[in-house]
Length: 70
Image (cartoon, rainbow, N blue to C red; front, side, top):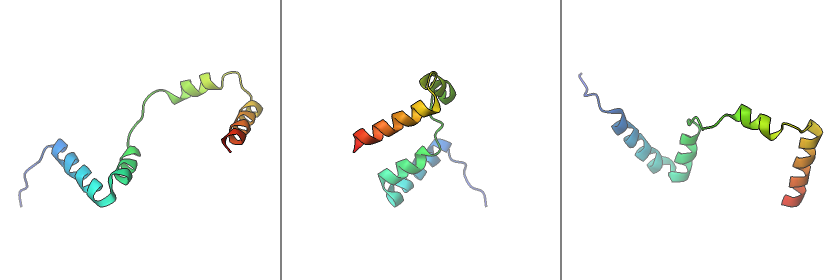
């Protein structure tokens, strides 16, 4: 049995259509997002975000946000 090799873009399009059909758009997108690499440098961003904060400062900030969110 010899099968024709299809272009990867065609296979991807068919797979996405099937996911949309079977899962719905929202769940299909959620499923696909788990395979993306994202962008940026988390380590650098984290270091600059929390550069001058102690663990107690961070916990205090979290508690304040939780109180204002209620």
